[in-house]
Amino acid sequence: MKTLFLVRHAKSDKGDPTLPDRDRPLADRGLHEAPKMGKRLAKRDAKPDLLVSSPALRALTTAQLIADEIGYARKNIVVDDRLYASSADGLLAVIRALDKKLDRVMLCGHNPEFTELAHRLSSRIVDMPTCALAAFRFDTKKWSGVVKLKPAESTLDHPGA
Image 1 (cartoon, rainbow, N blue to C red):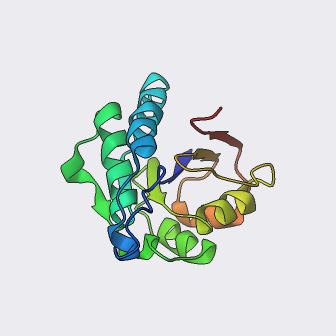
Image 2: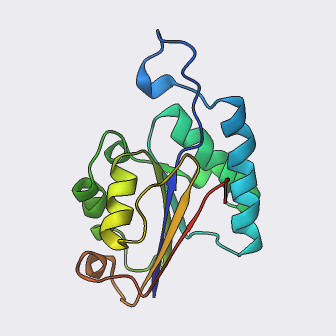
Image 3: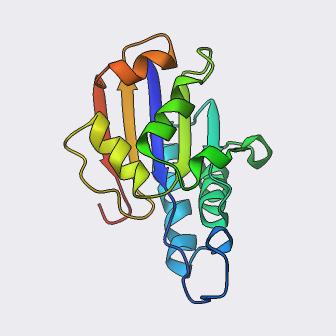
C-alpha cells in the first residue's frame, strides 16, 4: 500500500502587496491552524516517510509546523520547485517518480492544483480549503501505479471540520 497526503498550505498573509508571491508568510490564523492540523495527524500516526514542500514561504512554513507536531525533522523536508505554480499533471509526475521504497509521502503546496489533483483522485473532494489535508491509500507497490488507480481509500480533513 502507498499513502499520499496532500496538504494545502495554511492561511497566508496578503497584507503586504509589495512582497513577491513566493515570500508571502502565514497569517496569524495559518500559524495557529498548521500546528493544529499537525496534532490531528500525530493522533492518527500519520508520519510520512518523506515530506516534500513547495519553496513558497507559506507552504514551507506549513510543512515545518506540521513536521514539528508529527515528529518529522525539519531538516529532512525536501523543497521541490515543481510543487510551486504547478498543475495536477505536474504533481502526478512528481508522485510517479517517487522511490518505491517510500510508503507514505506528504506533499505541501497550493491551490488550484492540489484541489484539482485531489478531485481527480476522488470525485468526492471538490475543494481543499487552507490547511486542508487529503489522504489517499493505493493498493500498489510502486508510485508509478498511482496514476492508473483509483485510491482504495480517501479522506479530507481541514481545520473547520
